[in-house]
Length: 283
Ligand code: C2E
Ligand code: MG
Ligand code: MG
Ligand code: MG
Image 1 (cartoon, rainbow, N blue to C red):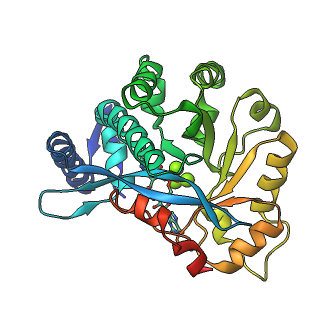
Image 2 (cartoon, rainbow, N blue to C red):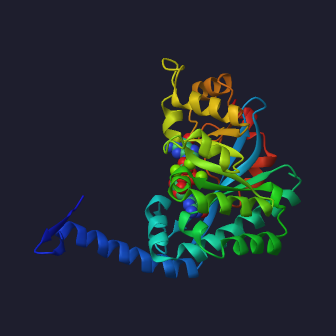
Image 3 (tube, protein in one colour):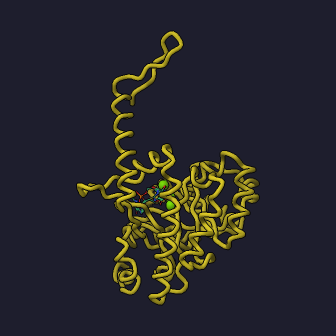
């Protein structure tokens, strides 16, 4: 990684950093025009009940396929979208698109299905965020009680009072709230109690740590215990093998998401997947 150097009160960028900045600017322009051309789409990763091995919902995950057919990973382009402000329009589109898919899933007969939507902190802080959310619900006819927003724990740490107020306002629209990547930010218990969140998502890093050899006293176990004490729903993300699924279930985690059950599915594949016996065949 390149570093800035301070000389005589001025900052100079090293050559490596210049290359990185140029690349980011290039990506930003490509993202702006690609978004306008319809290069973004959502993939949907099913979320399952561990005991019944039944899908109850899915998480919408943003995908960008560029003109030349290459995929840029979200961890690469979302920070650029945030930095450039593009995330506001993209995020509003994600809300509408995911809500529209929820309505299609319901029309296919899956009425107890919940759609989880990731929200960037930049988007979340925008003064019109709640209007954009209400608009998406209204335009698509998606039932708010079937929509969940995912915010990250790091975001939860930054401005506690703003966050508490915002979350309460969001809850009044009827949607529920999950804290994504939970366990990485060390939220205090009393703080968590003041936030009106519904669910904690155990970060994939702590799920990866779960093996037969190390089943007890894991961070995952602590998060499950914390969730239970606070009366929150718990879901584990990044479950890749059956051993992890079994241990999580034994520890009292009822819900999970991960490659073991399904990879993120192309938009046209979700409804078909839900109607298939893919989950029971995998078990
Ligand atoms: P996230 O919200 O924590 O999403 C989970 C990530 O883990 C996804 O990566 C998913 O594809 C991946 N994953 C799921 N199961 C497994 C597994 O079993 N093993 C492994 N190794 N990975 C698994 P993805 O799709 O690359 O997204 C990365 C991040 O980008 C997301 O992390 C989220 O923070 C962000 N993101 C994605 N879509 C959106 C969006 O629409 N809006 C915003 N603001 N952020 C988004
Ligand atoms: Mg997420
Ligand atoms: Mg996550
Ligand atoms: Mg993540």
